[in-house]
Every structure is written in C-alpha cells, then in structure tokens.
Image (cartoon, rainbow, N blue to C red):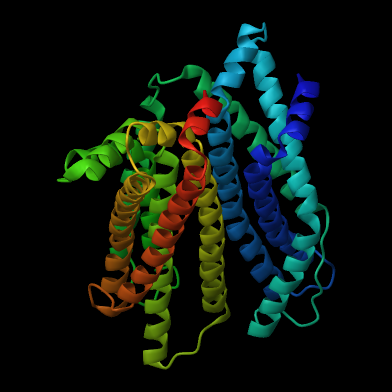
Length: 436
C-alpha cells in the first residue's frame, strides 16, 4: 500500500498541494520560533535575553503546534472526503481498512516530510529576522547571535509528521463511519471549554488594574469560549439556518444547501469563529493596555514589551493559518461541487443564478462565524476594559473589529465566488459526465 501511496502522489500531485502548503507553513513557523530555544541555550547568553527568547518560543510554539494540526487536518479531511469513491473501489477490490489507512497515512506523511524539509531554509531566515526584532526593541542583547539547532529541527519535523499522520488517520476513520453521528466526546469538550472560558473571564475581576497578568484571564477565556463555539459549529449553523427569514429561489436553495452540508462546513465555520475571536480580543486588549500606559505616562517594561510582541506575533500566525485553512477548505469544497453546478444548469439555472446562490451561502456562513466570534471576543474584552480603565466597551474595538471582519469576509466570499466561477467554466454536460 505504501508503493500505491507514492504512485498516487506522483500521478495527482495537485490533490496534495493544499496539504503540502499547510505542512510547509506549519513547519516553518514551528522551527522559526523553536530556534529561539537553541539561541537561548547558547553559552554566554544573559538571563534576561534567555528568558525573553524562551517565553516567546514556548508560547508561540505552542500556538503553532495546535494550528499545524488544525490546518493539516482540515485539508486532509476534505481530501479524503473527495476520494470516497476511490477508497470504496479499493475496498471492493479486496483492500482491508487497515491497508487503506496505511495508504492514506503514508501519502500524508510523505507530503508532510517534503513540506517540512522545504521549510528549513525559510525557518532559518525567519529566525534571524525575529531575533533582529528583539534586538531592535531592546528585549534581547545585541551580542546574542541566532542559532538553528536540533531543537528547532526535531520539533519542526516531528510535529509536522505527527500532525499529518494523526490527521490522516482520523480523516479515514471519519470517512469510514460515513454519516453516523459520534458527537458525544466533541459535545463534552465543547461544554467543558465554554465552562472553563466563563470561569477564566470571571477571574478577571479578581485582579487589579496594575497587575501584569491582568490580560491573561480574559484573553484565555475568550479563546476557550471561541473553541467551545467552534466545536459546536454544526449545531450553531443549523440553529441560525432555522431562524433565517430568507425568501426567493436563491435564499431557499442556499439555506437548503447549507443545512445539508452543515457537518462538512463545520471546519470553515470553526476557522471563522477562532479567527474573529482571537484576533479581535487580543488586538483590542493590547490597544487598551497601550493607550492606558500612554495616558498614565508610564514607560513599558521588558515584560510589557514581550507581551506586546507575543500578542502581535500570535495574531499574525493565526491570520496566516486561518487564511490558508479557509482558502484550502473553501476551494476544495466549492470545486468539488462541479457536478452539482452542472445539474443545476441542466435544470435551467443560469451561471449567474448558480453564482448568486454560492454567494448567499458564503455570506450566511461568514456572518454566522463573525457573529459568534465577536460575541466570544466581547466576553473577554468587556471585563478587561472594566478592570483596566473603568469603562465598559473600548473605542478601539470598532476599528479593529471592522478590520477583522473585512479580512474574514474578503477571504471567504472571494474564495467561494472565484472558485465557483472557475467551476462554472466547464460545460454543464461535461461537468456532470466527468463527475459521474
């Protein structure tokens, strides 16, 4: 089966391009920040510089690890779902479920290994640029030189390969189960995340306005709340669709399509919720903190500078990964509907009508993700602002929220419409025949 996996990659390399891109970006980010561990461990590095580098590597490296898994998992899940007919043919030809798992996992590991190896060079350059930023801000001594050693190399390759193998295994298992519902563990984790997030947000009121750790409880609370909502994405989408007062052919068809594919679109909605919540909450709280320090005339300490750098870096990583996940998932999910689009056109729908329906679907999905992401972000922003400034809703949230919403909407709507337009270029009869 491993030989078959390698032949599958050689014959259809385009199918694995999304996985390769996710693995490349993930490995590059993980190795870039874990190289700070190698840098901090060099002889002669002072304690302050070593602490700054270690904290940055640990915090951002942890976020990077989670994002690598989610990004690779989302692309592999779509890939395996589109190969249902192929995998079923292998089963009918005598392949056992274990052999099919080995084939899919082997493909994923091979692609991930190529992506991780390709990321070594960019990670070295990225580590040097990142260390230069710490030098310029005075957080790390100018005498500290960048080092790319075994910690960066082993963690980058190891995490990427483990994420690919684990995600491929779960994707095959989920595809084999078909449409059966096995959501008990997911529901439990969702409610546990919501409960932990609520407790973390409430813990904000136990701090004073001058505590250095004031931002931690509301930030982590907003993240946990967004994770809980993201895990409940199919239910949330179904609940929204049941209450939409849309009329007309496009609206009715869009709602019906979304309801039928709620489980498949859960990954896209999860990405939107997490992106909106984490970006809005982190950037707004950092803006409130910076404005409060400027108003008081206080000078930022090294710890405050470290926190600010980490916040902006984490948001930057999330933006890159979520955009990759959204583009990959939306492209694959939309281009896979070529047969459906062909059938609609043969039934009398014009290309503009099909494109309009896709646009309504993307708009509903975007607004749902933005709404729940904004709610979870506000759950962290409001307590932090009340304790830090005695206000309730900071003015900074409007500009930041609008920017985040614009990025999410442009990514979701743009990818969906451009991909659908490309799929509609194929003549309807050919689209139906090829897909069959």
